[in-house]
Length: 185
Image (cartoon, rainbow, N blue to C red; front, side, top):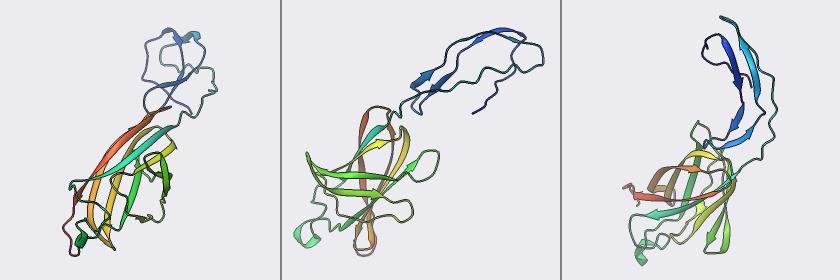
C-alpha cells in the first residue's frame, strides 16, 4: 500500500515503518530508514518495505443465554421456551458478513457444527444454554454478532452484541437473548 502524511517542516528525519493488526498490536517492523531529507514543499519517498508477518488469527467462543431460566429447547407444554432453531450472523465491524464455521460444543464434547453462511443464513437446531459455539482461526478485530431464536419459522427471541477477537488469543462472549413477542411465541 501507499500512504502520505500531513505536511512536515523541511528537515532531516528518521522513519520506521510498522505493520499493525486490527487490535493495535504490532505484527512486524521494518529497519530504520535514517536521514530522510524533506525539502520545503516537496515529497520525500521512503524505501518500499515488504513485511513478513504471521496470520495472527484468534478464536471466538459464543454462548447463547436466554433471559429466562426455563430450558430453551423443550416445548412450551413441557415447561420450556419452545425454541426449535437459531440463526447466528457475524459481521465485520467495517461491514460485510464474516463466514466462519463454529464447533458446537457441550463441555469438551463436540455435538455438531454451525456455519455462518453469508449468502443464506443457516437455521441450526436449537442451541441449548449449556452449549458453546467455538470458532477458531478468526481474523482479529471487532465483530457484530446477531442471534435469532426461532419457534418454527417465527422469531421468538433476539440478541446482539459486539466482540473484539484478539490476535493469537481467544475471547468468550455470552449473547443475551431477549424475548420477542410475536404471534406463535
